[in-house]
Structure formats: structure tokens, C-alpha cells
Length: 179
Ligand code: ADP
Image (cartoon, rainbow, N blue to C red; front, top):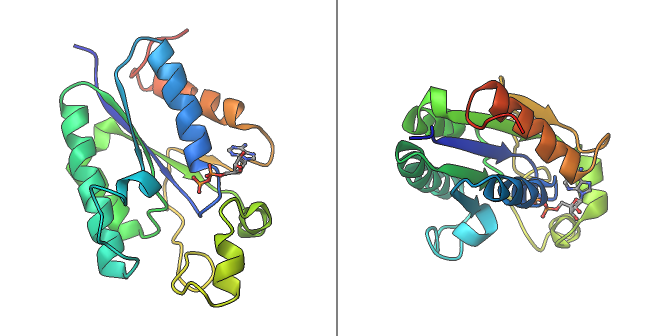
């Protein structure tokens, strides 16, 4: 059986997590793997419906995602998680649940100013106007991962190249074979 793994993308809203996750998932599916995409925005509409953005709710959201991810990895699948996951402690808990060997942590480290300029969903503008409170990067903290397996600024390369860099890590760790 092929080894399962979880590629966990963490970073600010608008950093590029979903975009990179979609490109990566498409490549891996093309390569014949079974891939599940757990996108934070989508997860919040079902698995985590009803949860808000307090620290406790954010932690609960991450632990639910980690629970599902751990099952997928255990059964040899690939799961790509795209979630802000702002707190180091919750990410470490997720790593413990999934297993250190099966997790590839990617920090999508687009600077706040760039995310805010992109403002894909108009959320930064709303947060600056005070219409949303507790927004990560504006009035809620983002704790950068202390030791990610890979960090991508997204400034020097497009989403396809970002996905390719992740695939190199997956090859190096033996999760996928060299193409
Ligand atoms: P997130 O999921 O982190 O909230 P999204 O993927 O929804 O972010 O949005 C990121 C935006 O940044 C998209 O409009 C995307 O086209 C753009 N973008 C520009 N450069 C990159 C890159 N190198 N990687 C990913 N997204 C990028």
C-alpha cells in the first residue's frame, strides 16, 4: 500500500492556501493518487458548522480537521488541508494526531500587506472598518510555525511553482514517486 500523508497549508487569509491546494490536489490526482481536499472555508460549512472564531472554536475546528486527516493518512490516502490554523499549539496537536512522519507542514508565508492588497474576499477591508472583529492578522494573532517543512512567500513564484516545490518535498520524503 502507498504511504498516506497530510499536506497542511497554514497562513493568513488570502495568502494563497486554497489556490495552491487546488493545483497540488489536481497534480496528485493526475498522478493516480486518492486525494481529499479539506479547505477551511468549506469545512466551516459542514464539519465545523456553528463554530465561530474564538480561540476555543478555532482550536476545535483544527482538531476536527486533524481527526479526519489522521483517518485518511492511516488508510494510505493523501489529504491536503488549507486552513489559516493560526495557533502553534493547535497545529502541534494536529501533528500529534496525524503522526509526525505523515505530516508535511507548509507555511504559506505571504506578507500581511500583500494579503491585504489582494483582499480576495474583501474581508480585510471589512475588518479594518470594524465590521468583523477577531480577524487574523488584523486584531487576532497569527503565530508563524516554528519549524515548517517548507515556507512559500508566493512573491517569487506562481501557484503552479509553489505546488511543484511541495511535490519536491513529497518526493524527498517518499510519499510520491519521482515524475
Ligand atoms: P487563502 O486560501 O490563503 O485564503 P486564496 O487561495 O483564496 O487564499 O487566495 C489567494 C489569492 O492570491 C488568489 O487570488 C491567487 O490567485 C493569488 N495569488 C497570487 N500569487 C499566488 C501564488 N504564488 N500562490 C497562490 N496564490 C497566489
